[in-house]
Length: 130
Image 1 (cartoon, rainbow, N blue to C red):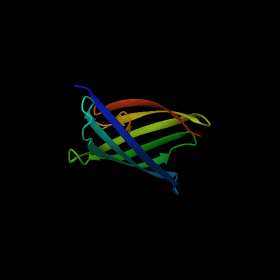
Image 2 (image 1 turned 120 degrees about the horizontal axis):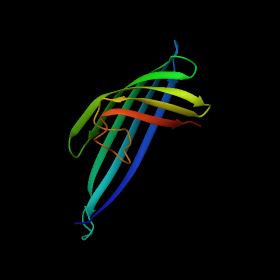
Image 3 (image 1 turned 90 degrees about the vertical axis):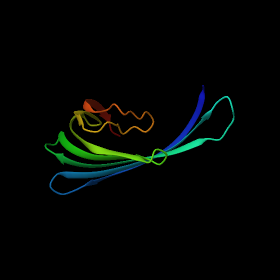
Image 4 (image 1 turned 120 degrees about the vertical axis):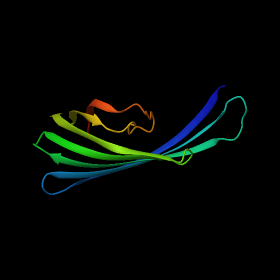
């Protein structure tokens, strides 16, 4: 059986610099996707997925940050919700490049394009900013 899929994703993120070297950020992402049997131009089965991430960061030094996140992922079709925590740190190696790592205590990642439910565990990352 062959399936056709389509999806649209919208993501908004805001960052607020707070006193005492703290940083608060919020991410809200929405994905509307549809699937149908490719052999028959039938009805699309629609699914809406929401992701919310709240991050509290602390500037340890000018180049080193530590952070914790609370993440929640839910889907209307499966009527399920997952949530959990992530902790990490990042080091600024250049003006627009950071190296980081941490531990994801949830089973899911924050990428609605390539959503994975095998994301539990340690991670490393390269972050580009502009």
